Length: 620
Image (cartoon, rainbow, N blue to C red):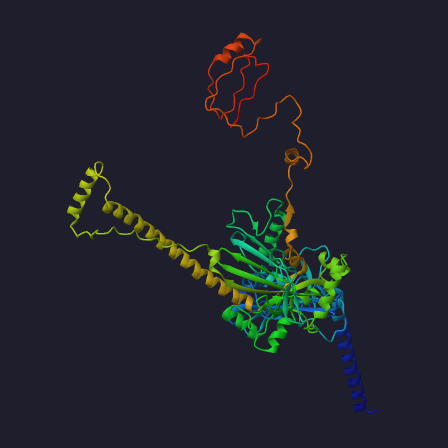
C-alpha cells in the first residue's frame, strides 16, 4: 500500500466515524413533543368581538338511536331563522349573543392526548365525519360563524372531565390534540329553547267566549257529521262578560246542573299556554290565501292533498256550503278585542323528538290508515302503550304521540260590546222662534233676571226646550268620545287579526296529545249535578204528601193553622177572658188591641201568664 492509498483510507474511516458520532448524538437527544407548546393559549385568539356572530350550528349524535341531529340558527334577510327547522322564525338574538360572548377567549387547558386513536375515549369524534365508522365516542360539534359563513369558532366538545366543574375534553376540528378546557356555555340545541313556544299568546283576562265543536268527517261524501240532533250536545259554548265575572254555559239547566270550575279553569289554562312542539310548512298557495283574506282557498289538487295529509278537509256543513273542517273537530275562542281564533285538530302521529319537530325524509304524507287504527285502538284499549308511558316520563329516545294543529284568525266586532248609540235631539216646540243674536252683556243680564224670577215663574216650553238641548249637547259630546274609542278598537282589532293571520299562515303546528285531550272536553265533563241540602229535601218531602192519602194535621202541641181564605175583620176587638183566668189576664184582655190586621202577635211578656186556651187570631 503506497502512501496515497493509506492516506485516503484513514480519511474515509475518519469520515465514517464522524457521521456515526453525529447520529449517535442526535439519537441521545430528548424527543420534541408537539402540542404542549399550546397549553394556556387561546383556541381562537382572533375572535374578540361576539357581535360578529351571525350564525350558530350545533351537531350532535344520539348513540341510542344512531341518529344525527343538526340544529342551526342564522340571521338572514333582516330576521333570525332556524334553517334546520324549515326556516321557522327564531327568537335568537339575545341567546346567540350570550353564546358568542361565552366562547370569546376560550383557553386550552392540560393536554390529554395527541393521538387520533384516543378520540373515541374522550368523546371527541366529529359527528359529521363519515369516514369514521365508530358509533360511539362522537362529540358535539359547535360552529359559530360570521356573516358570509367564515367560521369564528369550530369546536368538538366531548365528555365532561370527571369531578371537574365546567371542564370538558375539547379539540379544534382541524387538530388531533385533545385538551381539558373550561367551558361555561349555556348552549341548547332544543328547538323550543330558540323560539316563542306559546302558540296563541292569548291573555286569559281578555277571553270572553270559548266554543267547542264536536263532529266527524264523512270522507266518502266530504260531509261534516255531528254526533247528535241537539245543538247543545254538538257545540259547547262558554261565555262571560269580562275577566271579573264567572264563566257561564249556554243551555245549562241551573236547577240541576252547575259548571265544573276545575275543568273549566284547566281548559282556559291549556288555551292560554298552548305549547308548540314542532312545525311543518304549508304550501305557498295556501299560505298566500291566508295572508290575503284570512281564509283557506285551495287552488290545486296539491293544495288539497297538503291539507288532507295533515287531517284537514273542505267539507259541506249543514247548509251545504264547503268549509274548513278537521278530523277531531275544532275549538273557537274570542277575546274582548274582537279577535277570534279557530283551532282545527288534525291527524295524530307518533315519532321521536326530531320527527315531531321537523319530520324526516322517510315520513309518509298520507298517514290516514295509521291514524284510523290508532283512533280505534284508543277507543277499545284504555291501557297505555309502553311507548306512550315512556314519552310521558320524558324519555327523548321514546316515540311520542302528537297531533297536527291549524290556526286561523278573524275579526268580529260583536265581541267589542255594543257600539255607542247617538242621542236624539229634543223636539222643538211649535211656534218657537230662534233667538236673535245679542251681545254677551245683554245675554248675561237676561240670564240673571231669569234666575231672580225663577222662583215665581212656571217653566215655559221655551225653558224646557233649552234645558233639554243642554242635556242633549252634553250627551252628544259623550257619544262622540265613546264612538271614537269604539272606532279605535275596531281598527286595532282588525290590525291584530291580520298580523296574527300572517304569523299563523305559513305553518301547521304540532302539539302534544295531552294538550289535545285537555282542549277537546265533552259537555258532560264540564258540568256536575247540583247537590241539594238534606234539610231542603226533608222540607220538600213533608210539604208534598203522597197522592191518594188523607192529609193529617201535624203532630205536637201546636194548633193547626187557620184556613188562608178566611177574611180578617178590619178592627178585631179584644176578647174577654173566660172564667177562672187570673186578674192580670183579665186586665190584659180589657186593653184594646194595637196590632194591625196583617201583623203577627208579639210574644207575651214573661210576667203575664198566657191564656189557658188561646184562640188563634184570624189571618188575612
